[in-house]
Length: 228
Image (cartoon, rainbow, N blue to C red; front, side, top):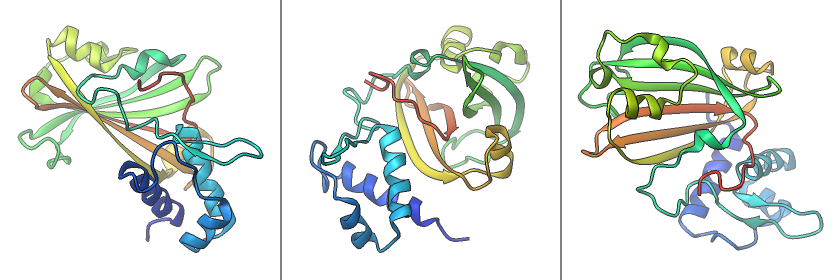
């Protein structure tokens, strides 16, 4: 199965922004220009623009040109941890904790097993906001851990307070995806619906990767100072 057109276009636009081909603060090309540039339908372009707007990358105003903002990946201090969890009006629900084989060997190069932690995060109106799938190397926290320590907790707080991990920096990877059957069922929406995969990589003071948190959402929140 090939890559969806909207994802290819989304990735290309993000690349243009991050490499200053389309500088932050400049005007985004019009819908007609984007249709001609990428050779796709107006519906596809509008889907891409909706994703970019929901992320806070662009600002659209009726009757005015669309501005490029790029709020997501351009942090003021790349080495500073961004505590994105405390800014949302939401709670986590622990779904699953298990030890799994390391299938992320390119990321966790020296670990044979990982803790896999699946959580749901809902808004206070009980609407599902995101699905979190996190991975922590087994050697970081040991193999005799009570799974309840992950219940309703920020994983960074668990690592820092329970296991004395010294977190020094984070980086972020963002991509457009389509929902799997299982995730679509959780969101109560159709399979292959466009979604955002937001991956946070957390490193300790020795520059060792200690946590990967993969967040899937279909409705990114516009929160003031969310990443700043």
